[in-house]
Length: 230
Image (cartoon, rainbow, N blue to C red):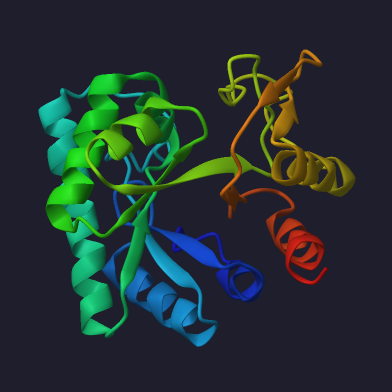
C-alpha cells in the first residue's frame, strides 16, 4: 500500500494488515500519512515496507549492498513509519521488506541478519514478515523477534520454496480460482504446489497480495470472503 497505484481505498477494507511503502521504491511522506489514516479507518494493522532505494525499477532489481548498508537503509525507513504512526497515535505492528530486498534476505543469511537487527534496534516488539522457510524468518527468530511466515496468493513457487522470478512468464497468478486454490492449500494443508508439480511444505501465517497486481482488488475481496467469512 501507499505505492501510488490508485487502488488502496478499494483494497484496504478487505485486508487485515498493510505493508506501507517508505518512499524508497514508491510513495512519499504525505502518501504514507494518507495510507495510515486509511488503515486506521478500517482497523487494519500497519507495517513498514522498506526496500532498496530504486524508484526506477520499483525496488524489484537486486542491487549490491553490504550488510551495513542494508541495516542503515532498513532502519531509516522503519523509523520514518514509526514516527508517522506515533504522530497518528497508532502502533506500528510489523516490517516486511519489499521486492528484491525481500528475495535477497530470504536466501542471504547476512542480509537477513542485517534486516532483523535493524528491526530490533528500532523496536524489539515489531513483528518481521518473511518468506516461509527462509533465512529472513530464521535470523529474526535467532535475535528474539516475533515473526510471521508469509505465503503468496498471486505468485508461483519453485521446488526450493522460493518465488518464481518475475522475469519468467509463469511467475504471476492472475486467475481468481487458481489463487484461491493455492491459498486454501497453503493455509489448510501446509503445502504449495510448485510450478513443476511438486508439493512442498510451507507455513502460512500471513497471506500476501501485491497491490500493483492486475487483479489485486478482486483477489482481496475474494480471499476475504473465503478466509474471513466462512
